[in-house]
Image 1 (cartoon, helix red, strand yellow):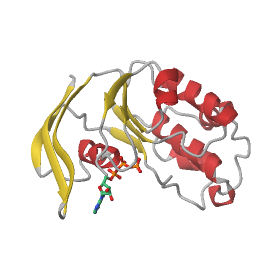
Image 2: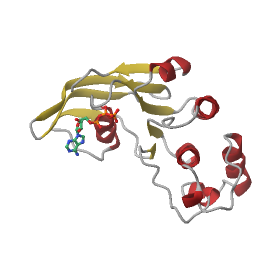
Image 3: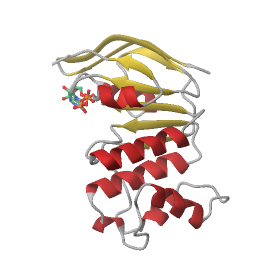
Image 4: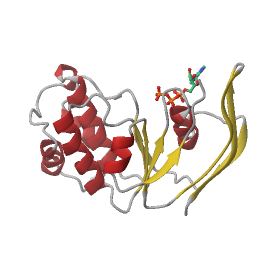
Length: 192
Ligand SMILES: Nc1ncnc2c1ncn2[C@@H]1O[C@H](COP(=O)(O)OP(=O)(O)OP(=O)(O)O)[C@@H](O)[C@H]1O
């Protein structure tokens, strides 16, 4: 089922963030929500995830089983990378499959607690965790932010390959990312 977003209004105090926002998000497609900083992308994503109520409007068709990469990585800092991912996987997923996913995007130290990882390494663990979760929809909030160019290309390819025929909503302010991904695009406007 496609996701239908109709007439969404949202304000924080006297700050009007969304003012009658409409969109259709296709099932089993990657959709990028693009727009400048502060236009309300994360706010919209939180409403789609059910984590923030809208003031007005309706959102239909969001599946129950969700996974996400938030702007913060939200990892268990004292766990290693494999353990962080394993927590969200079903019984059929082996540690070696998880390790292969992590290694394919350059996470080779699988015993260290992730608190010892760099920001970019933590981000990649959060991405693998969201992808391997048994979810029916993925929400990715600026998943490639802070990665160097080579790592970013590798991780974008990994996300594209591993989300084929899944419903994915990805927030970005980068037109280059939108161009590099086979995606539908929702453009949000400047609100500042
Ligand atoms: N909980 C909140 N309370 C008050 N204001 C908020 C809250 N959440 C967001 N805002 C404001 O709403 C506006 C939109 O924020 P949002 O984070 O959705 O934008 P964004 O497009 O995702 O920005 P960025 O690309 O910088 O992450 C901003 O002006 C922000 O300060």
